[in-house]
Image 1 (cartoon, rainbow, N blue to C red):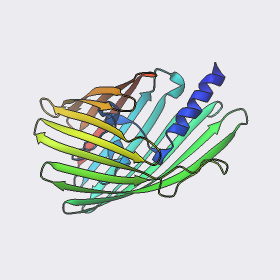
Image 2 (cartoon, rainbow, N blue to C red; image 1 turned 90 degrees about the horizontal axis):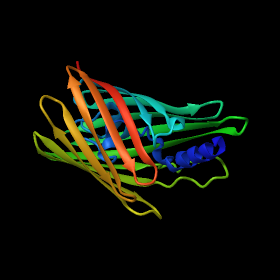
Image 3 (cartoon, helix red, strand yellow; image 1 turned 90 degrees about the vertical axis):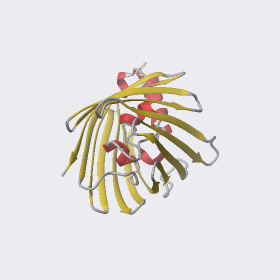
Length: 268
């Protein structure tokens, strides 16, 4: 049983090498899309060209269970801050145990804003350790992003794995890939979000989501991802500066994943 779980975890880890993303938070329930105009700390960490407010501090901590497997439980922390035209974010995540299998990711991001334009630079590293003397592996990746906003239309384009990282000398380098994020603010009551992933020798992946504002700053959201078709949704509850979020997704073969996070959005 342990051997099969270890094999599954290794496959899952290799499948998530691209950009060494701290895959967590609200976007689990939005099909991988993000709110460009109102990002969470983990969104900002992923795409530093989003529209974080001046003098705003974002913080997020969370717990995730993937496919109802305790062996894949993950905890993470993310934080970001903007001061005038510049912003910075940092985050870390881990799942597994060092005496069996563990995966640690650290990610940093820098943002720059000029009118309707935003630009970002991010770097990330992954460290994998397999117990019983099977070894430890690590690699680093970096990427760039750029965004543009005009009234209710918002767009971000991101390139990742620009250095084509490798976990080991004997593995193939991970290819560079592109992600396109979009948001349409239909009104003050909802936003429609989208994402497209372009990667060499892979089918184009497309996702669609919607964030629906309720009373105050509370909201519900949903998302769909193709290839394979994955369903997602969740709820966000805000009180003063505190944000509590629950998101879930359903994979047709692997089952449910759940994410619970606690965040802060402060304005200095």
